[in-house]
Amino acid sequence: MSKLDLNDIINYVSRVLYIVDKYSISIDKAFQKVKHSWRFRESFKVYYDVCSSVLRNYYQLKFLARKLLNSESNKAIVKTWILIYGSNYFRRRNLVHKFVDRVLKKRRIKLSDVDVIIEELKSINYVKYLSIKYSYPEEFVKKLSELLDIRELEELLRAMNSEYIWLRINTLKIDIDKAVKALEDEGVVIELNKEVPFLGLVTEAKRPIHHVSLIKRGFIIIQDKASIMTVLSLRPEPHDHILDLCAAPGGKTSLIMQLVENKAKICAVDISKPRLLNMMKLMKRYGVDSSKIDYVLADSRKLRLKNRFSKVLIDAPCSSSGAIPRDPSIKLSLKRLDKVNWYVSVQSSLVENVIHQLRDVEIIYSTCSILPEEGEFLQFFKFSP
Image 1: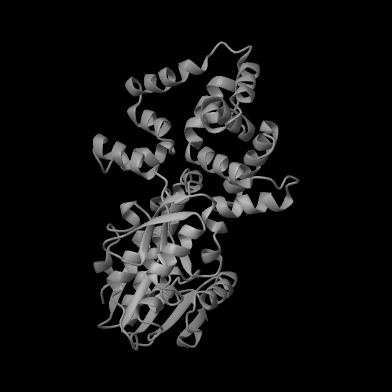
Image 2 (image 1 turned 120 degrees about the vertical axis):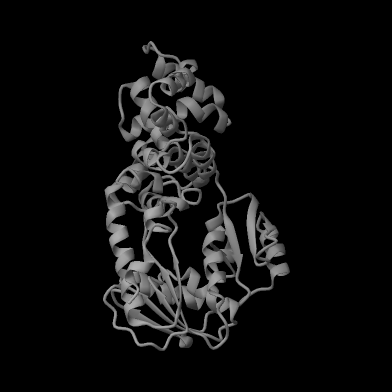
């Protein structure tokens, strides 16, 4: 970035926060929405990194913004990030120090008081202390505290704040060794997983991952390990006829076809026409033989089924609470925990519809939520005919 403009960063990031909160969309989608209308086109990686850090620390920053600046506005939250983290992130520390001096000039509180303020919560309300320290909605932390002991809870919250990216090598289009070398040529280093040889964890990236040409061309796919293990548990085989419910955007669908070298048949169902159309484009980019896929626009809760499938994958919509390491914007949507009940209702209807219509078929049910009512607490047995 040729010139560091803190006011521009404040305006940009606060706009991203507004869009994420209002529309409950991912950091990538919100970032692109703002980027297209912004006048500066220099180093957007700086802007993206700040957006990511602000979202990951959102609840802590909101709490401290109220203490430091007497405001909880989005701009105050971004200003608080600069006050606390700016000097460690930006090279032009003198500019940050001047900003700190100017903003806190007439305030009685000092930055050195921040840790003390947070630690004081420990003796007052330990759940609130954890929610502020690790930056999660208090109700979400309270819910987890009813399921885990304090040590396990703190370890979980700390772990979910870790940033990591898994990349799946799409062997329909490229060999593993060639992919690793090609990624290195683009400044991305991965550590291949011992359990899944076509999966790699990003250990170094000199550019934003979504800008890597191998990803844009479908040779490499960003996909979490948990998502991949779900498909592996399905054990797809050539000539399987698989029902894939809630299939779009198609990450798991394409992996099924990768594992069987395009030799299975899939019925991919989704309720969203735009998502289904986008899925069809992605399958082409990923080298999937779309002649082997029946794309169905339908509500999977009401779909009439015939007992002709060998396996069923239900990738149910959920709160996405387990995907925070990949997308910190999920933290903002978790403050609306009442929506979890809606997700549970949808999930139950999906399972019930399949079980009541299909016999002697293997069903794999998955969500990317850590909340038990969206997973292990879902009572499959009550749907049995």
